[in-house]
Image (cartoon, rainbow, N blue to C red):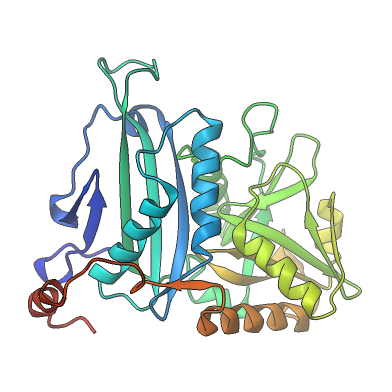
Length: 319
């Protein structure tokens, strides 16, 4: 849980200003609140380096462009804001989120015109949404809630409206599972709430092609697998393929690489994280640690020594 006491008050960027989280405000008439009208992206910082920052900011702008939402900041300015947010919070390993909403219009109506966009950036200590279960493997069900298809709204848009995924997670948790597999309207495997899905069968890595968010961690997994000689197939996957897989795992910025050991009461493979899952997990962690595809939060920033010293004085418990 995010703490908001004076000692743990995080610094957020909100519409042009860096403010303590206890003082951060947006209008109740913001379209993001009224209609879920906005886009977002998440990323992680490791050892004060933000992983694949360019790719995340590109995806944010592509999502915004797809819904005709003009982000006030250029890509380079947005990157500077993200890096500075991490630095101001003294976070080595961080979970970072950028939210851009349609903002407030002349009237609190559905019309998207004449709105002033809202931009929010925050960073908190890195946390895996899978929790402790992410190490030993999680239990899942196939959800009865189907993925909203591309014919309704493109699944490539990282929209603020995540009700579909929230309902999947609720159904799974209430059934005693950690999470749920989402199917498309034809019954093929799509993804899980906040995760992409991978299947290992006979040393071949399979992942769905359609009705999914094109995850940046997903693309990283594919890169790592191919460089280590693991063949990758992108295509349609049935629930049957999950039940009978040698290994199943999920990938996301907020979760990393998460093994799946049970689905609908059926044991997956040996019931433990498999060798390819472990290899991908370790390779991904090594990539984060190396900073090879990351950008330092200390690059191209205008933070003065005086400001840094002032922050240290105000946050003596921070590293």
